[in-house]
Amino acid sequence: MQTGHIPLGRRAYDVLVDFDCLPRLGSVLRERALAQDNVAVITSPRIGGLYYESVEAGLREAGFRHVGRWDLPDGEESKNLARFSEAVEWLARFTPDPAIRPAVVALGGGVVGDLAGFAAASFRRGIPYVQAPTTLLAAVDSSVGGKTAVNLPEGKNLVGAFYQPRLVYVDLSTLETLEVRELRSGCAEVIKYGAALDADLFRFLEQSIEDLLALDREALTRVVTRCIELKADVVRRDEREEKRVRVCLNFGHTLGHAIEKASDRRLRHGECVAVGMLAAAHISVELGLCSAQIPQRLEALIRRAGLPAAAEGLDMAHVMEFVKHDKKFVTGANRFVVLRGIGQWQEYEGVPEELVREAAGSVLV
Ligand code: NAD
Ligand code: GLY
Image 1 (tube, rainbow, N blue to C red):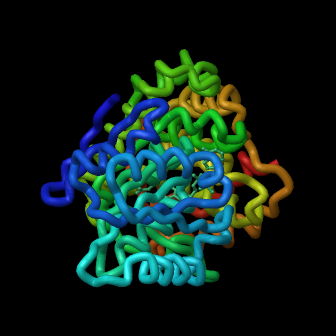
Image 2 (tube, rainbow, N blue to C red; image 1 turned 180 degrees about the vertical axis):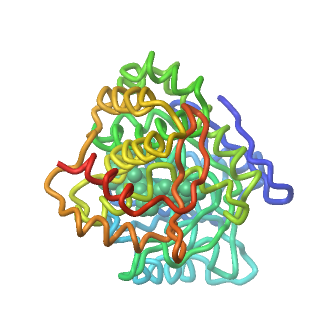
């Protein structure tokens, strides 16, 4: 088992990464005294159908007497206030005794993790929770760092809290049941870490992206643990996104989010991030910050990961409208995460609108 650590003082926690380890989650919770008698597993019909039984058996074997399951229906559209209310009302029924403190296990991808984390943050003003991510995206990104949220009709992740889990418990074997499109989508975030933060990781991906997609254990462990290390360092330096450090994780996301919205969820998040990274790299070259070789390397890797290098059938005006509403745009002066080289990000304020339009045009076909 590989162990990472998120060093946040009193809110510090470990990230454990292994294969076939979900059945042992109960004993780990027991050994680390992370839960009392009541463990509330929040999952989805699909993920729970695949993995709940083994988690539940392990919890019972470890002596947890009251174990329950609540399912969030599949899909981003479930990450909303109505479902959040259902989750916390279920928690209230699950543990009516105020003297008993339940713990939550979020078993699923980023959708389950974000809503379950927010439920844990809010129920009785905060109860302990553990992230058990089951997608590549959740393993390398959303399960670590304590961002929890639900969406409003007005926008994504508009209601939430920074609330750190007590443990992140990654069973990489769960990726074997993930649809290949979801796996590729998670690869976009992995490529993001390499492109923005770590040239060695990027070079490793250039050598081994096919191994990663084939879920080769060595490649997968190396890549996932490195991404978690990188995220740990970012979160340590800027836990609440106040110091203009955590923004580096938004590389590719400004145009990516706009494309995601304009595609009306036809495209997966990672597919849009892939396209958004190429647009941001285009901007970087045009601003004279890096050589044209950088977007070429990025595009080659994105294509090998089976991700799109352009988005089809979207209206430019529509995309630009969403770009202007992105939360990373500040009044009068937009801010983009750009590259000075592979592994070297910077924030650039005031990219000319004409250049943003040109970059969007370069990835819309
Ligand atoms: P997801 O949670 O919707 O999961 C994708 C699909 O895969 C779903 O259909 C799910 O049922 C299925 N699935 C999950 N695990 C499976 C498995 N092991 N086997 C078979 N099927 C499985 O998507 P995601 O990409 O994991 O997460 C996206 C969400 O994460 C978005 O809501 C985004 O806002 C959020 N996010 C949050 C953060 C953060 O810091 N909190 C960071 C990035 C993204
Ligand atoms: N994925 C963005 C963040 O954790 O800040």
